[in-house]
Amino acid sequence: MSYELKKTVVFVGMMGAGKTAVGRALAAKLDVPFIDSDAEIVKAANMSIAEIFERDGEAFFRLKESQVIARLLEEERCILSTGGGAYLAEGNRAEISERGVAVWLDADVELLWNRVKHKDTRPLLRTENPRQTLEEIFEARVPLYGLADLPVKADAGLSIEEMADRVAQALLDARPDVLAET
Ligand SMILES: Nc1ncnc2c1ncn2[C@@H]1O[C@H](COP(=O)(O)OP(=O)(O)O)[C@@H](O)[C@H]1O
Ligand SMILES: O=C(O)C1=C[C@@H](OP(=O)(O)O)[C@@H](O)[C@H](O)C1
Ligand SMILES: [Mg+2]
Image (cartoon, rainbow, N blue to C red):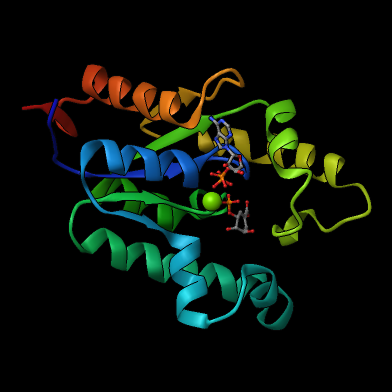
């Protein structure tokens, strides 16, 4: 099977939803470039996300994130995975819907917590009660993720490959202007 990607697919959603992993797998399946905005920021700054938050603050990170996303959307069509906070800014949402299509990986809190609890890489969860913090962030953000062009349910039972297949099928079914079989 070969595919034609007509627009950049931008993964949005909570930390742990699988944006980076599923985005990479989808790009391999479609044979198109994969880019992760967090990885781009880390590469440019030569610091980890946690170090950037600590040294320069979240506002600085958000500025870099917006710049990187705008630049990547102008470049060639690709699969672009964003960090969980990227879709909250109205300006980022406008850029994404103008030049790409936003796919929300919709996972429940239980699944997210199981994915993120062993890792210390996400500065927003460095609190006294990270599980509660995750729940609070989830409640605040879900209405905004709901503005995405295409929600795709992330089920605990599905592998990364199976999730990439699910996203591809959802795009083929709902958005022939974005993805077609050739
Ligand atoms: N469908 C899946 N099945 C199993 N593990 C997954 C799945 N999706 C993501 N993961 C794992 O969960 C963790 C978080 O995924 P990641 O892609 O980093 O999420 P995000 O970029 O949305 O924060 C990673 O260790 C990743 O390998
Ligand atoms: O939800 C967020 O605000 C963040 C999510 C992270 O990316 P992932 O969603 O890929 O974990 C990373 O951008 C940063 O730690 C902030
Ligand atoms: Mg990620």
